[in-house]
Length: 96
Image (cartoon, rainbow, N blue to C red; front, side, top):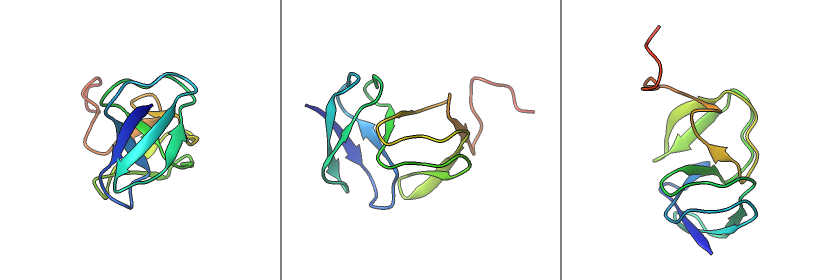
């Protein structure tokens, strides 16, 4: 079973400490308990949604807002550049 850690009880994402494949159950530890079933493959060090996140909703990690969802994100989906607008800039795009 893949594992992921939640860093703050308010977080709506967990960071994988093992890579996971579509359909894998991911055991949550740290400030989270239970499991999340991956809807898509998620690499080590990447984030997965631990609950549904609506378009425009904040992405919470470390108990702080790190970005906003650019589309609805379902529990178990990969949370990354394709569906998050970072508040500190992206690094793969020039600042406007």
